[in-house]
Amino acid sequence: MQEQLRKLKDINHMLKKEIRQRIGEDLNELSIDHLRVLEQNMSEALNGVRGRKYHVIKTQTDTYKKKVRSLKERHGNLRMEYEARLEDPQYGLVDSEGDYESAAALVNGVSNLYICIPPAPRAASPPAPPPAS
Image (tube, rainbow, N blue to C red; front, side):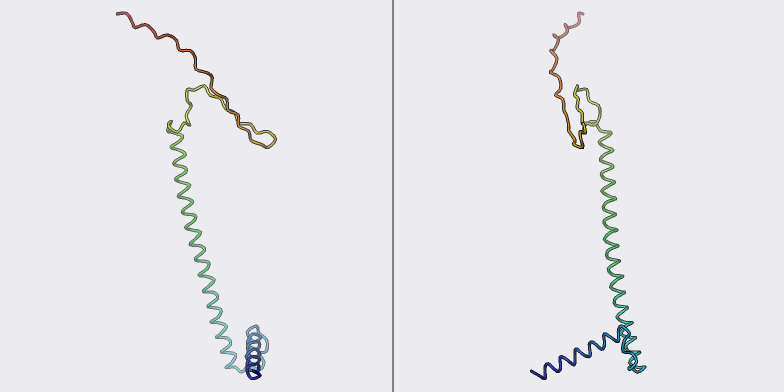
């Protein structure tokens, strides 16, 4: 048990020393060869971090490009549908002959919609006599 504890403490001490060296502390006792190895390790770590960063940026950029394409397509479809509705009377956006009235009012920040019922149908006049020949 004591041996296990001593090994763990040694490992902990070595890791702390390596961390200090990676942040630029305790470099005076290192030889040129050890400094080169440390520099190479840090360079490889930097390349790994940069690679991951660029991968994340590229993935996000691709995702946003897809979203923009999708939104542009949706916008085009909605615009075509809107223009079709403006031109096609079946959608009811052209002036109909009915005698309907409606008004929308905004009162104290609350929207109220008032719809008037169309007037009762007028009494039909008797049919016109057929033309005399």
